[in-house]
Length: 163
Image (cartoon, one colour):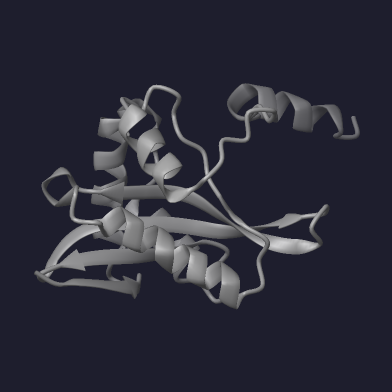
């Protein structure tokens, strides 16, 4: 059994979309997925991409992916790698693929002189939380995630528009 990791390339957008839909189903968030393969292609494979993906292939079969981007820490004065999605198909779990994807991101962060790799996990996802804890990741308990989207985002944006 062999694992290979590679950067996503044009033509992978349909596979990535399948992974995203499978992840959404696992997280009970299928209703939130509005992205299309074209959206992914435009984001990942444009002239100046701001988002990137690594694919995991086990014995020639697509097994999982990590999608990430760079953010910045003003306190550290360095960029960070933000892991947006990490997913391994059920049939391939337990083979160390998720760990290898995180190792790849840690190496990338080190090579790019980033201060850390960070991500979020759903509070009910005990298997993932145990996995991350086992790697030595720390839960930033003092930080609460917020999101501004949909009508609330539009309404706030409209407040700044000249009438």
